[in-house]
Image 1 (cartoon, rainbow, N blue to C red):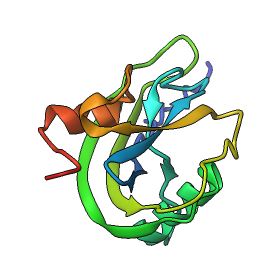
Image 2: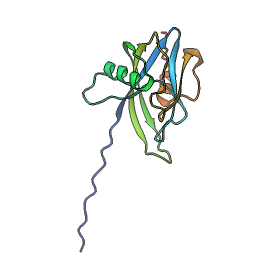
Image 3: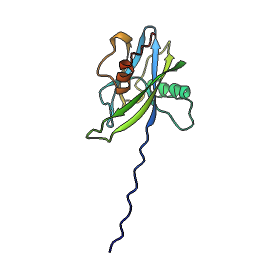
Image 4: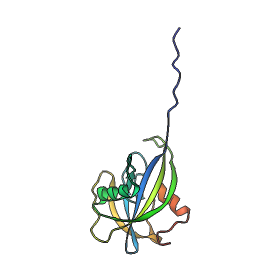
Length: 149
């Protein structure tokens, strides 16, 4: 008689993402995402995962620098969104709480520092954002939030 091993539930917890709304004049910076896991081909703000013990503003500065080469001045924390990404053929479902950070960059040209993750960076007016947008930005807009008030 074989012994049955009890099944152990898989613990799934949300991750924390930090999205940096980088402003310059009356525009914001967005990158066209390259991702095998989720959101390929959509426009996103610079950002990434909050690391263990990391301050949210420090994460925003780090991610903006790593992805764009720009140094940003953090102006404050913005809203947050609750984002559940459906499973796709290439990956399982994902759940993120995305914290938005408002920042400014008054000089420099954004670089594709991670070309395997981003096709291009471009500046857009808030009322003329490109599409398609990354799910957290869709949720941000659906909630009525605007960068200018």
